[in-house]
Image (tube, rainbow, N blue to C red; front, top):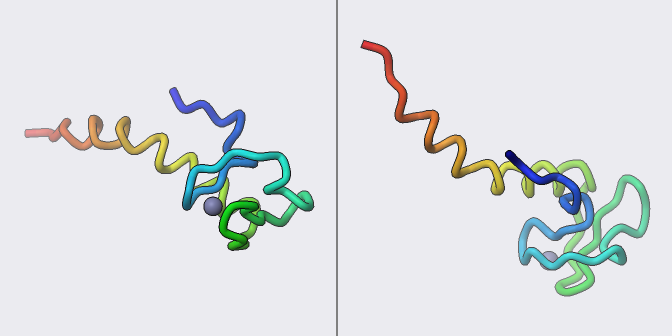
Length: 64
Ligand SMILES: [Zn+2]
């Protein structure tokens, strides 16, 4: 299960979580390093990194 509650305001690079990271609905701006990204892409990277453990497990099931 992937918890997506804070992914929209968490930096995908340094993992800093702050409401101030979101100056607008579509924009992401990290208050720690100042790097910017589209809010959707930043959120997608956060979800992907949280789901990585689950993906690795499913790769182990091969059919014969
Ligand atoms: Zn950052």
